[in-house]
Image (cartoon, rainbow, N blue to C red; front, side, top):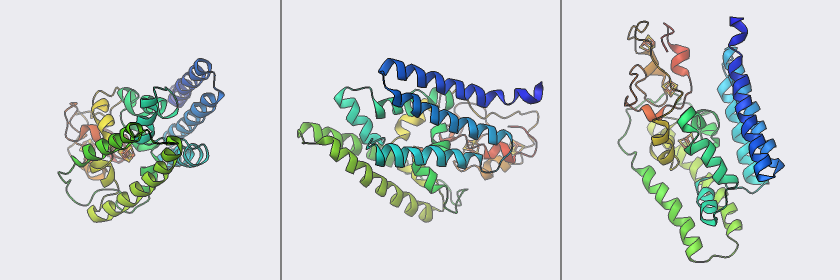
Length: 275
Ligand code: SF4
Ligand code: SF4
Ligand code: SF4
């Protein structure tokens, strides 16, 4: 009974996504939402199932299933700009569709429940960056996180300027902005990873989406916590963390707490099962 109980988690995950899928399908009268959220739910549930089975690449499989779907199918085939510019675009047009729904679920309200799970399991930028060789940062963290506010403001100003200038065919511009934005993100991410010897340098210093993700994930329901009774302060968890989180501190104010991407490397590597 106890053994089968652990498989409840992927089932519950699938049910939550199916509830979102069916609700959006019926309220928006659009079958796409049923397909979209069912696919993402199935991918995440499969990942959780593989993680429970202790499959080493469980997280990477989810990253590829969701990331490639969003980049290739939604972005390139369906011409949906799911980057932050796409979010501003739909917000300005006052339409609760595509990118606005995506941001609401994955990046604004979702993090109240699952923190920065998006960053660990679904982001197509990190999907590629995680293939690079610096899985654990090999240099101390830099104090340049303020750059994210500049990229955030730049994305907002870019879309606002298009509306103010009454640019024609904004949808086409948004598609090309998606292509150009991704090329810039990948190029910057790879250069920074090698410069700072850290695959996740782009996430730590540049990514504009963290302006939403960090404050919302501060309140996350789901967090990795440390059982102080079991912990022997060996420090292994901090040495394997890609985001420099002080995971042995259970307070919400722990060092780099809002950087946690729930990758579970600390949990997998703790010799005392304290996390
Ligand atoms: S911080 Fe930005 S680039 Fe990094 S995983 Fe999160 S959303 Fe993707
Ligand atoms: S790896 Fe485990 S035992 Fe070691 S410091 Fe971290 S939580 Fe404590
Ligand atoms: S290693 Fe642990 S603390 Fe660090 S990002 Fe992954 S889950 Fe969060």
